[in-house]
Image 1 (cartoon, rainbow, N blue to C red):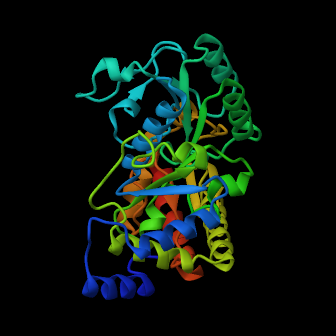
Image 2: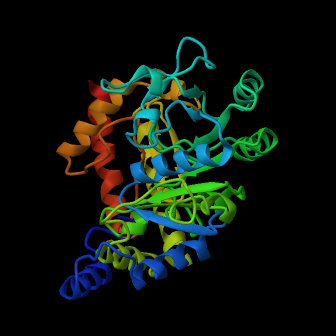
Length: 366
């Protein structure tokens, strides 16, 4: 909720649309307008298809990548979450190039075996994977800024390296921007870091608080989606007018001034949390990308899932509950990113820092 829960303009737009119609099971003018807004903002999207969730978006993008390349294997990175479709609920085996094992009951091993899981922010394992499985990898999917193991920005050169390696191998590069799309910059992480993927998945912000997702990318790839092409995807509620008007209204209010305010408020909050932790002798490592941030209880620089796992997760849990007692609700896990919204003004930031100071003092005594 980048503009806050119940942003008045979004609520008004949804209310007005609800009085006209809730849905048709067919394309509407609003769907076209939102698609045009997405294409105008996101560098890597020439065509876009609306769906109902981020999971649908990533599932569809992977199916499309396989249809486009005629290959089966998918590469994902440890700690990056791409929804709960079967192929993506996997973990690494004993070695980084081991084919995936199911990470959830109900996922057939045969499905999981088509997914390779590699370490985030490292390029050499991916180069090894392409050498080990030449002409077999259909796509590499990544959160350009990881948000499901805490907020972990890409190391310098990582995203550009993914772009180079996938181009050389003829694989499709998918940026999962369900979390980062329109949150870290007007054009998403790909605009922020200057790396353009072949396909992009979106959600969250473009729904304005209602269920929505989208996938889009190069026109030559997107032409394969039915009915123009043979890669099937459909959904009766996809592009429904309530979600479309909410998302369109949200995007219209995301100005450069909003992003500047988000970045400043988040920076002030993170700096205040770090200062409070130092005051009480508690080591922390903080990360931030625009309005996304994380505080890890660690002396180590955090760049990967393994580093998060080595942090003091138990202390984070104590901090979460201490902050909850203070009336501040954080993401309840060290493995989840936190977000500042445009509704969080300087007074709220100051109140949060003061609450954290008391919570950290309590931790220091325990």
